[in-house]
Length: 493
Ligand code: ADP
Ligand code: GLC
Image (cartoon, rainbow, N blue to C red; front, top):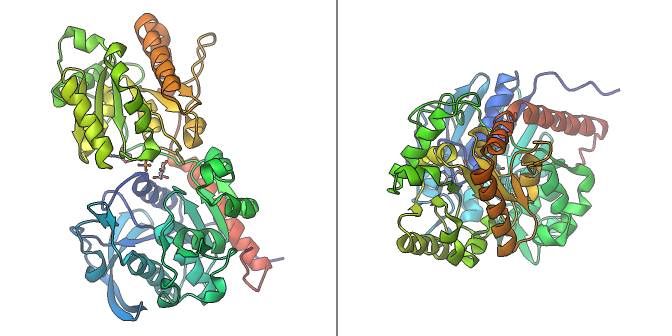
């Protein structure tokens, strides 16, 4: 019998974002919260992530040189504590990371992203090879770290877990990079990292990790179908026995209506007075009217990357009908110019009803979650989604499309038994969204007691990270056991 995995694990996480150091979306919240939660639960976690422009990170605890694409890079690793048993190691390599953007500038990807993120994976593998007590398991996230499992396989490292946060971002590069990144042509196959004659970082992660996870059970099913597979559905089906959906948690310290420094007044399910104060502050921040009529009118909030994924074309299609809803909108986000322009145009047309802020703003994000009555997330697809969970916690009723993690976190309100937490619509059609909006607004206006019940149902839900972290530990121990019983080290690909 192989020895059982130890109770307390050493985990190396590798990711391209970590809040508050770097963030474009939910990935950053997840990597940091998972690292901290695992640490609190007694595991030892190192999170390796690039040191982008403007990030602090002394002292340097290690230096190394990595060869990549015909050049040598000097790399320093700077340590910062995250909490009990958890730390981040910033990979400092200014020629690659000291730039205006993380992945792109003015919407154009850096042409050396293959080197930038190949180096992240190579540094992780180089580092762990030099540790007296190397990690038991390596956990890599999204395409940027997809080569980590590949290098680990090549160099005989510990087992790896790869998490897909978004299958649509695949890191597909010209195949000329294969030898330049130290990869073998023998793996440039359908079963390896080849994807339509290109080198796919994401596919490298999916094909070579010992286990693949994604961020909700429903998304784990969806990505095995062409509709949501973005060309990867066949690959996902081929790995279905090594694929698990683990729902994200939320950072309940960061997102807590009872102690949120961005709010004028705390609140909880027993006393929503502070929520009314947040609504006033929100309207005021967005320079919308704050009179009695405005306060009685429901406020619909959105915090979102402005990209196709988030369903903004549905809103564009029903834009003319927005004023008839007799609601106000407060919108926060950045992204594609056409969606930014759409919101700017709408707010110029109805300045008393539609407040828009194009930019990244932590305070506004909190104010919207707390001060809005309804949170809108009409996503085309949604691997997990965090904002709907923040909303539930703040008594802001979510209206979401019934996809991915949104299905797993929002339950449809049932008027008869008073159960449920929000409104869901299935078809990706403007009329279906309009119907859900009208149903929600009718309940808000005509049945305040049902509405209050709905709010409370959501506020009572537990989305803390402990449950999800425990599931990851099960996956980690699973890959460790499998490795032990197959001494050749094959990871099932
Ligand atoms: P995704 O990762 O697909 O963007 P999630 O719902 O998982 O979607 O996570 C989005 C995260 O990014 C949330 O923490 C949300 O508050 C935050 N966010 C998105 N856009 C902005 C913005 N413009 N300003 C502040 N926070 C934002
Ligand atoms: C991705 C997904 C989002 C998910 C986040 C964190 O950005 O789009 O649904 O919540 O990753 O896992």
